[in-house]
Length: 424
Image 1 (cartoon, rainbow, N blue to C red):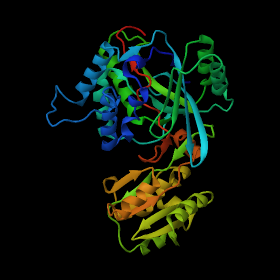
Image 2 (image 1 turned 180 degrees about the horizontal axis):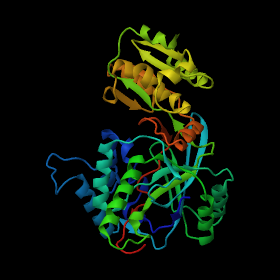
Image 3 (image 1 turned 180 degrees about the vertical axis):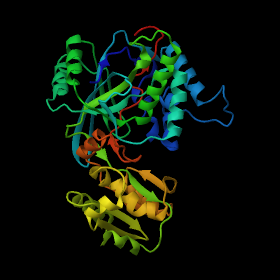
Image 4 (image 1 turned 60 degrees about the vertical axis):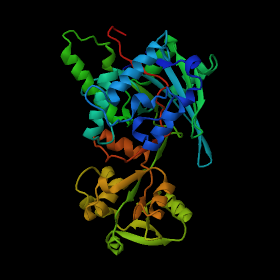
């Protein structure tokens, strides 16, 4: 089971920074260089300075984005730009937004989750890369804090969390209530009542935990934990580095949204007739029809959208049974992932690697990059189904990177878990 506990969060001091919507930002791995500059300009205290500071030409071993992050964090704590809450708490977190005309509300909570070697209850669904892990480890070593929560899923078919949340709504107003640039409402409530906290803990008993976002940070937290344990003769089980700042939400909720990540190809053959070996090629008149047809076809077949040479196509897989022989690795569910079909039947045969691709969750952006001649083709995908993700992860398989995009992201800068030397 996942062991969780409340914590004394470090939060922004609203009396010092003013509008908190100007100080928070998304997780580091979805921030583009343009986004980074926008966040830096929005406030001198924007959280991007901690999680993704700028790289300067004069950077060296003793002065770099990681040492600057430590300096910012220390200075902000000393100046009470950031302050530590008086009581340990678990934080309920709601996000309300409109997606394709439908209003959605995702509910979860933020707590500390204990890190355990060989924990058979925690499942990762995507492969990780060495470079981002080295980056995050350097940051963690310098700041000694969980700056952003990882995002995990667990089954709450009994809706225990929602029931507990409704009890809180009757008693208190949110500590934080902001709307971000994407018009997503974010609200945060601290829960200090021990009875409510015990209810939340009980909801996790014997539950599988699926990491949705934060694979690199989770693996880095485990590595940092090993490092700290190796340095200490007497290891306290309650030492802060034994825990990870974690956002939990219900995998069974209808408001849990996974978006696909589309593939934009910089260079692609002019003649696409080779695709007929595996796909039926259907020419489509408009981009809107392509997107509608892609979504409809996903109900009962494997299909991709292709924009190439000024033409729009739907590519429908000819024979699903061939996948078992054409894709040599993985379970049945793994072989039927859209990202694996695309990689195995098209990209691998053309020696197209991740370096040749641009990834985006926005279909219109993918199409626009081709229109602007910044790429020669784009492949539009359907999202991974929750049940597929569950089956693959329980089977201890990892999807390729950039397989899923959970939306919306959990904001960075709402709460921080700053490590203490003493027992927390």
